[in-house]
Image (cartoon, rainbow, N blue to C red; front, side):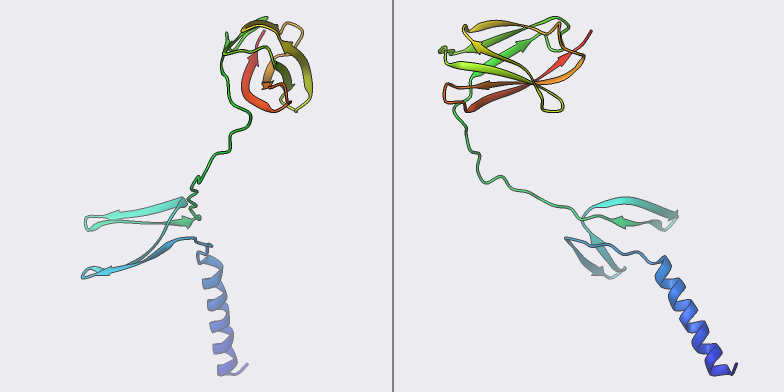
Amino acid sequence: MNFIHKLVLCATVLGMSHAAFSQSASLSAGGDASGGGGSVSYSVGQIDYSFSSSNDGVLTWGVQQPYELFEIIGVEEWGGKYDISVFPNPASKFIQLNIAGHNGDLSLRMFDALGQLVRAETIRAAQTQINLSDLSNGMYYLKLYNKSGVETNTIKVIKTH
């Protein structure tokens, strides 16, 4: 092999090894800063990092991750919320459901963590006791519905032994 072929092969191998160890990330924000002491590139968000330190300072580098900001521009209300309380929670046998402003037009459905309906009842009073003794231990979603069938409230209920 002549000298030029060896040189091209070495340059290719070195270039490939450099690319294999370089950092890459899709960034949503960042920039460059420079001053009298040097310059630095930065990004928003970072999931892993390493650092080196000496008497002159600390250098930190890492793998960047995009950072997203969300702005809530409005909240849509569904059917009017009731002021409700459920206690005790967690519970083993019974829970007490108290509904302020109850008007007799509510129903209750209870779903397990998989979304399967395990109980459906009509709420007849502002204070209602709900039996949990026949349910397995776990997390349940107690949902209240108005007379039009619109969901008004959801509460997580934990059933223990």
